[in-house]
Length: 127
Image (tube, rainbow, N blue to C red; front, side, top):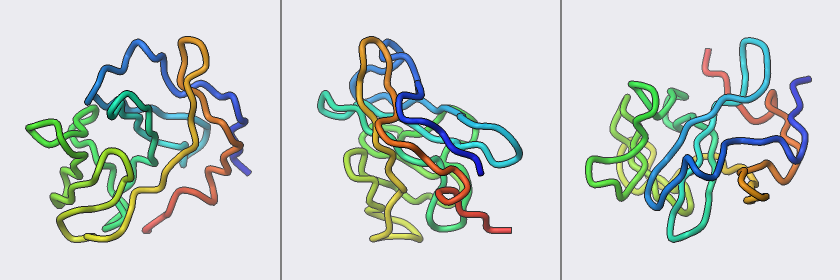
């Protein structure tokens, strides 16, 4: 079982500014947890980096998560767009579905998981 402990660092807070998103990879093996964190209205949100439509990573090329205006998260494979605060798909092939959220908090200068994460149960395998 691929478990990540509460308190696991996701990224340094200094890497996030308002409206920006940062990708991360945690865990081991063929199916690590690939996620993203975004600073939205002064709060840090985190999601699994996997579109509910077809299971693709949102960022292709890597590190590009936002629409050109920076207002929404964008799946570059099929054009689904997601609200930064809730992860809800507001347009595209999976409208009404959501990105899977991760519980995080700012602790000192880091963004950390606040609950244990079972990566195997969280990541959907489409093949």
